[in-house]
Amino acid sequence: MKLSIVSPIYKGEKMLDELVRRITASVTPITDEYEIILVNDQSPDDSWNVIMRICKEDKHVKGVNLSRNFGQHYAISAGLSLVQGDWIVVLDCDLQDRPEEIPHLFAKAQEGYDIVYAQRQERQDKFLKRLSSTVFHSVFDWLSGMKTDKSIANFGIYSAQVIHEFNKMPERARSFGSLIDYLGFKRGYQPVVHAERAEGTSGYNFARLMKLAFDVMISNTNKPLKMAVEVGMVMALFSFLLALYNVIAKFLGVIQVQGYTTTVFSIWFVGGILLMMMGVLGLYIDKIFDQVKGRQIYIIKDVIN
Image (cartoon, rainbow, N blue to C red):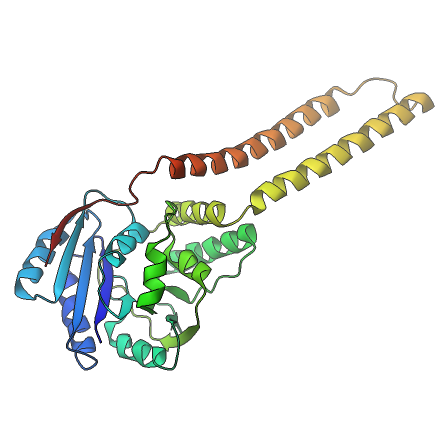
């Protein structure tokens, strides 16, 4: 039985040695056959040089260097395309996902699960990170009609069959969690301790989380289009009732002077609604355009070991 561990790397140069040491200490009691795949997402620090040094020292470690910064979920996809294990673990490099939890995840998977998610019992993120995460999940759940679990992220263990099916998915809008969720399979949950970030700050700020939420939502649901249709129907009904009121009021002599304010307000209001609907439609067309171009989801520049 071979175990693969995939970790996307960004601004992780000071954490990499400890990350590899703790992963090794955690997986060797399970199996001697393992690989640690570190995917450098063109980190602006010295991460790639550190990865190259570690690869020379430990043949269990495979270094993957992307041609540019593609983003966390694309880096995960790149690493998963190279795995050879029967079971695959995905975890972040910041050590908030504790490598010591891997044996617990593996043991849970042996109960007959294809996927075991690491369920964080108490998040150790700063207030702003927790707030932005809450807003992200709320916006995503509302727009997509789905129900996400804030205690679950990418950290977990996945069978080779799950990852094989994941690698077949060509979507350019990559969200590891939502794509895995689409696949189905039998899944379990393992409570884990969530550690404080060992170094630096998260690469996800509020703006990037919101962009991810909209990208994933547009790629997984047509609810915004349905909402645009519903708003259009409401506006049409409102306009009809307003016109009917004006006709009746005119005959009854209620309206003596035509209302400038009402006219201007109506124009701006309807115009704003139309622009919003065009914007929603444009977002979907943009995603279609991205997909049909057929460009690579990621580009691997270098592979070591």
